Image (cartoon, rainbow, N blue to C red; front, side, top):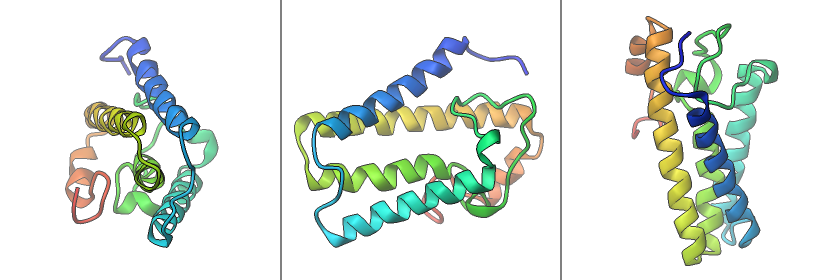
Length: 149
């Protein structure tokens, strides 16, 4: 499949995603201070593990570009959420920052959210080009949160 943007662009998005997460982790507490926040973080971890188990670790692709040997996965959490890995990151990071907020952490959380949203939309564009049935799958599922978004 022909890439629409230079490969450096896709890896730059991944780099920005990991840099944002790393800076947030280095600048404050890792765990939410309230039990609801901890529960949200646990949900995020479980969702991420479920998504990786469903996708299979060897089939996992960190860049938004679909692999040439990829298949459209519509089972497990992908039945309801098209991007459960991105959702899991947000379920873990949002309570983490909310519990130990600083201007720096809030800025990097915003960078992370915007990066994930941009990466998600770019990935969906590529998936529509790769899989003819992806638009139908989009109608049956949600991007990040069932029944909301």
